[in-house]
Length: 420
Image (cartoon, rainbow, N blue to C red; front, side, top):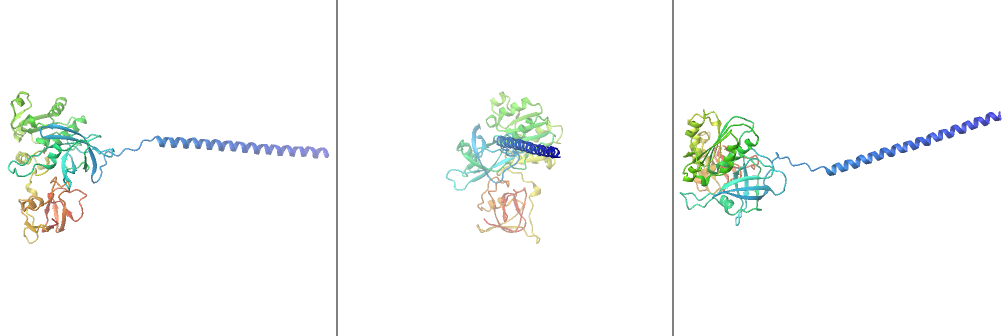
């Protein structure tokens, strides 16, 4: 019996030792496993931290425009002709700049020396989209020939004579409804006069850079070779792309122009040239140039049978095409002609169909009203609308302040009173 008890005791002790050994071994294994898991977590965390540290910041979406004005630096100034200058502009903040539709323009605010109030002007972008800069090309505008007492263009001459590299200007994002639709492949005809070539070059470079075979015909009118903007650039593009053709029209060519064959047509840009060059009139026509240049071509294109929706144009300042359908007498229910009252000037003007917009009516009445682009883009002419309503002949910007109007693109919708 004692032997049996002893054996049982030994067995119990052995079993207890075995259980303890198992527990210890299990504990050690669990500890090792947890340590490995912790080490793995630690390694993963370190890798994640390192990965986050090495990730480059997300670039600014180049298709997203900014709101309001943004400061740009004059990076480079290039003299193109005797009175025309190109300006390369880069963002002061160093961030990305959005692309634009070829043909659009920039609204730029300049602070001139000894000028208390900044001046705003609109200038077409004169090159295809580039991720590094915007470029404008500006002609120095002299005083009118028939009004020598008037001053020359303040901003254009400042750009030509006073603007320097590293100066800054404030710019709104590219804008404008005058642009070439890149989703279409139909042939286009570009009609440019003088500095009106600037948006056209943007269109040409953009189309050719995409390697598309879209047919483009450019008729470019200047006085002579001394005024021929981007002569070498246009010739290079035409020589290297058989679907892009240029016809240079010089109104007063020099003997050198003729001998160098820079002048293709001794005369002005005309619809008669188009009739000889084109198989029909079923094209989209884009125009930019001086007022008389576009007025004449616009009327002649209509006579040729070109529909109005095929004619696209851009004009700043006094250069404009006055379409008959938007020049209508605005009347009230009683049939009386609408009146425009300028409150501060204590002046009242009767609206009639000789005015295209309220700005013209103000100028005719010698009411001082600031203006810039005269196309509804820069906001310089914005004034308070004290009473009445206006209707717009061109789409106004979305950021126009409530209770105001833009006289350069507005007509009175009944009697109105303006705070000017």
